[in-house]
Image (tube, rainbow, N blue to C red):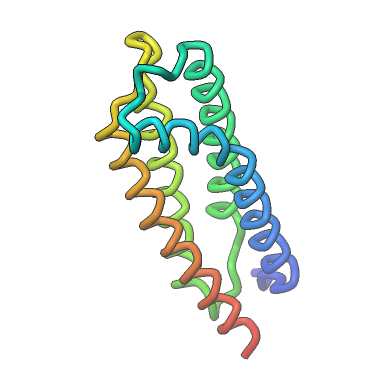
Length: 145
């Protein structure tokens, strides 16, 4: 059985995290539109066309996150990070679920956003992000030893 290549593994995980950060940065302005509308209780003022645009951006971003999640799941980690890699896998899967929940909170048929569902999806993403950051930090520490 061939031993996993640590350098290749680190590069794939680094690329996955870098790509996910880039996706998040690209979607952030759309997120801010809805977050501000919820916070200011002005959701009814967000036009349907804007909601469609945001829904599309979130859907595309979530689909890209799914690809990254699959990449993380498929790569073979070095033995010394196997446990923390599993934690990273689960955290990224949870993150994708939270992103999908955010997409689903945008109710195009009603021309609005389910604020409670949006807030809940945001909490899921925050929890997953914390776990992803912890996992990457822990992996880095273990690999550098």
